[in-house]
Length: 207
Image (cartoon, rainbow, N blue to C red; front, side, top):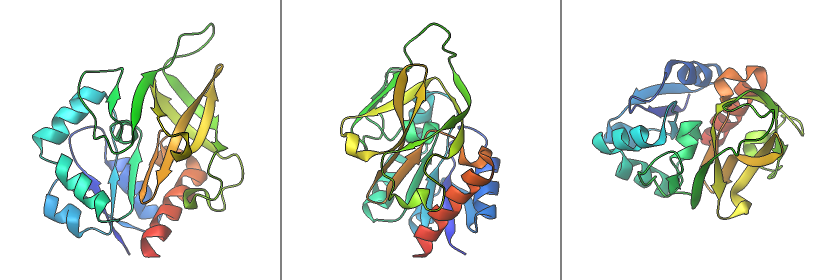
């Protein structure tokens, strides 16, 4: 079974991500050790919370360069929730610079009448990259579970792998570019479709 390093930087509950990866057929390894990250077959960057504390803790743990190195090496990389947002340049939520792996900004949902913020619950995806391997055998409009007040706005819309609509706003909720993939929703909380997505990611590692 492929070893997937789950990056530990004290932002959120890593247990559910590990459980999802185990069910999907991987061996998860929770670590902040750069050597173990380099040795793993793939990396997952989860996260729950705010942009600035996440970046501060990544930098305090000296994880910024190891993440860049792992991505540059070509190994599969999956960001989840806050782990997607910090791949971007910056966020309206804070002052810190992000990892800058994907060009763009993280933005707050615009207030609208009858619009709930945070966006919480099940939403259907529109697949902007229907051939992306993450979506294999998931059908054309899978449902996933969300909890977020901010969304990513990539400069290059070609990296958008999926979007969803909240109120009148259609926003990017998954990106895929080369070996880097990330999702705003929680696959580990998204029932069978979410586990199927993680299994697709694990299959990519094995391939």
